[in-house]
Image 1: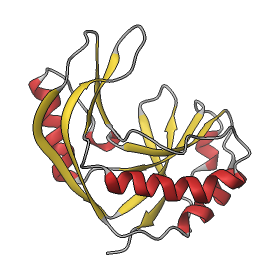
Image 2: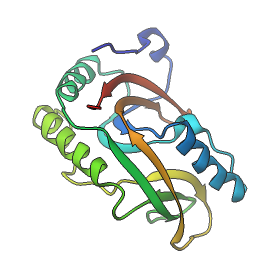
Image 3: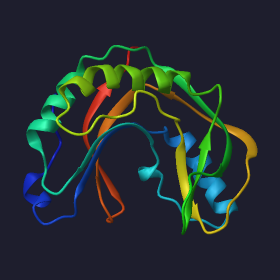
Image 4: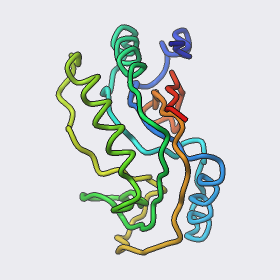
Amino acid sequence: MTLLFDEAASATQAPHNLYFAIRPDAAAAQAACALGRAAGQVMDPERLHVSLYSLGMHQGFPRQLVAEAAGAAGGIRQPAFLVALDRMATWGRGRGPLPVAAWAEDGVTGVRELHGRLHAAVAPMAPWRRRKATIEPHLSLWRADARASVTFMPPIRWWVREFVLLDSRYGEGRHEVLDRFALAG
């Protein structure tokens, strides 16, 4: 395990939102960005991800928590899998701009399995609040002021060969990869 974290830079930055995620490959990221361009949205392909398991938001960098969670995640064994997202709509509730997300009913089985393995490995050691044992995998694309109903689309597909531990600096719009975890071929 090699944590790729710059502690000196962290001292002056926004809170750390830490979570495990999968990221689309270059072709899938470009397909997602093309959807954004068609809707008049500019997207950063480096920020696209499907969240797997949250370690919470922290004002300071919780080095021990990250090391323990990364150690637990490093023991996960799962074959690589295909993701295929075939629909999009606004996601969630509330006021203000809502995320437009891509998801699928059938094309996310591997994501759910990986989340289940992460939950089993990380939740028992968690000093933070309990996380959900299930998720609804989705890829947030952009935010929209108006609600959009479900639209089916040509699938955004990619082979998931790794998952990552991300540090998303709250309000700064950037993600730092702290660690990478390979899936079996």
